[in-house]
Length: 184
Image 1 (cartoon, helix red, strand yellow):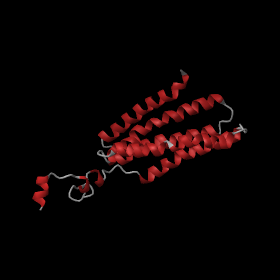
Image 2 (cartoon, helix red, strand yellow):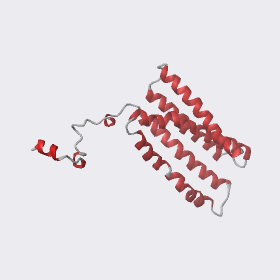
Image 3 (cartoon, helix red, strand yellow):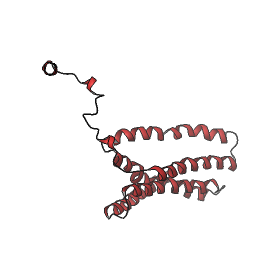
Image 4 (tube, helix red, strand yellow):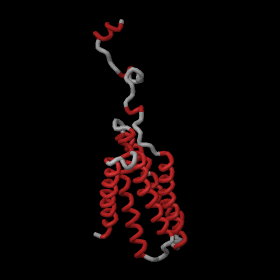
């Protein structure tokens, strides 16, 4: 039952952050780009800072439980940040971009058991776990900083390609005999 508390925190923070971001957008307090950057900062940078604290928490299991709960909770900013930004960039292709971005996003989760075992196999010390948490903090915070520098929420021109300029699909089109006669 207690293992669900971090995810409950994530749900609650997702609601709070999303509501706050909606307020900022509806009342023109911030641009869409800055609202997305704010939510991504909460998600990535706050989570990275909490994981950094976890790296230095030592053997204090109470602190570790609280910090892991907070780190998971801060991922609630993803809904108003990165996920919302996909729709801002291209409503027509948001699902494809989500699929690609989530495919890339699961790679660290796939590789993390190997990284953890590299540092901790037959060497379960606080110093080794500190290295694991420092790597985790960097893996969360660095993309957050990159996002702060380069994120935009401007609708991309490739969202609605001009049909006359998009001839790559003409090869796939099968014409009826009547259409072929009209062309000739």
